[in-house]
Image 1 (cartoon, helix red, strand yellow):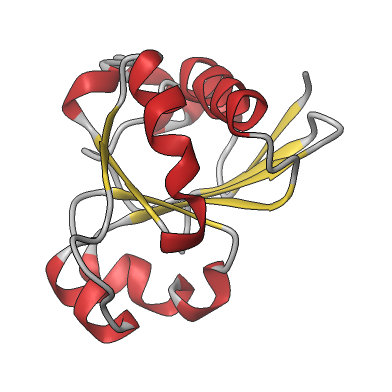
Image 2: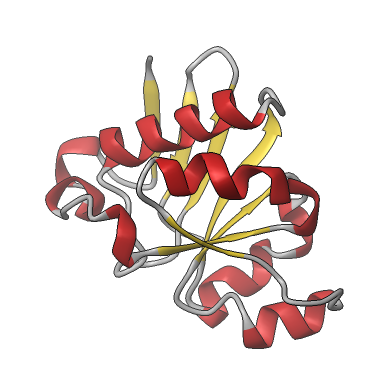
Amino acid sequence: MRFEVRGTSSHDSPLAKTGSSRGKTPLFLDENLLNLKKPLEEKGFTVLSPKSRKLDPEILAEDLPGRIFVTNNPRDFLYSASLLDFSIIETTHVTKDPQDLAEMIARAWFDYSLKAEHPAFLLVLRQNGRHELTLDL
């Protein structure tokens, strides 16, 4: 897989210097990706989802700060990510098979040593493996 980091060089990236403790960083699933919960948990992630049907403003204020939001609809959340200190993993351009997508997220997690304790990022997953990581939201 080939990864592209935008906003900084990959060897200077604050992501490259952090650990990859999957269990400590909650991933928050968009309501249309709830089938990822079990496959991601099997890979060691802590996975959260809306308790009930919430509107986007409620999710923004109550659920996303300090977390990593997994969604295939990032445009409604991009502006708020840096303001509210959360990151986004975009799944728009990749398989929706839960096992394959969970594997892709876990691989990107390892390759970039992702975690929520750094500035907001946007990781756009690509089926061809040329993922894009933007650090300056």
